[in-house]
Amino acid sequence: MSSYNAPTDGSAGDGPTTPLNPGNAEQPESSPARVGTIVWGLIVLALAALIIVARLGLVALDGTYVLIGLMLGAGAALVIGGLLSARGRDKDSSTGKS
Image 1 (spheres, rainbow, N blue to C red):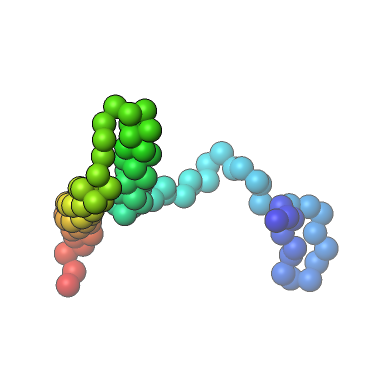
Image 2: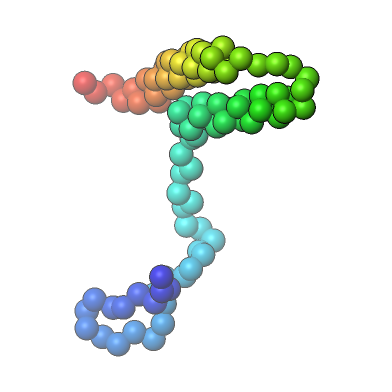
């Protein structure tokens, strides 16, 4: 990507028409983390931890029960996170217009 902005009026440009990092320009708003991304990240971390624990021989794990527990936990986290996200959105978007 180039920092040179060609003029649209047909005149020759001498260089960049806008500074690359102006001091007073507004920074784009960072979007909050999505609930699904956080939940899937936690699932991967939990699986990795369970695999490490099983390989060390500290606990004998049954794969079926581990999978059921992870899916129940992930489902609950998605539902609760979605409800909390929707509740937060409702407070922010009240403009008084219908």
